[in-house]
View 1 (cartoon, rainbow, N blue to C red):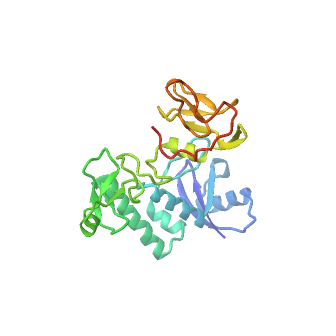
View 2 (view 1 turned 45 degrees about the vertical axis):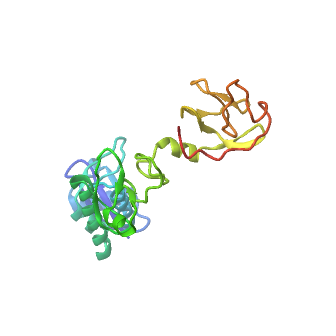
View 3 (view 1 turned 90 degrees about the horizontal axis):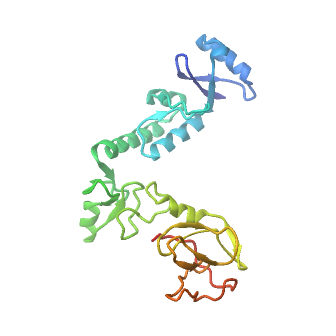
Length: 258
């Protein structure tokens, strides 16, 4: 099989070697020495297949970056720059993959340096009116539909909310990380009901993890609320969903934070 090896330190480079499936590290270093004249004592080897290199580079491009850098940790990241010309050879990119990578590099350049982003619906390039917001209007789609058509600058998906900083799409790079925590946290049993173990205070948005006790909670902002149904206590401090260990209807994982 073909294996790509990144040689750290002396004359850092990526080389491609044809090796047997069960080749050991000693055999690898011997082959590298034959190809590069670098002694095995000076080698720190990071190796990956062409397929793995392709997928790694694709993930780099999808994150909006313009450069490919070595991800090897030993123990700190190497971060050595990999030239695209080397990537094309070592990843054995097909003509279609090369076109895909080059197109994405161009799009990332437009996004990072010229302040343009491509609408995923009509493929036209749009500029942000306000660079402080990721909410972006597509003039072409807006003109065609006779109503405002907006998308997220970060994930390029349709804008889902009335806010200017949160597009409402899951796993968007600009998504509030607290939302991901609320959505993906483990569940636990509270008063006989399965419930997310982490909630945001319905008044101030402070993240609170339930560690022990009943369903009734008091935030540091002094607001009392039920951890199960998320109803806030009334002005008299009474819980409208029953006493502390009474079962009540569980509210789903929160998607909005006050």
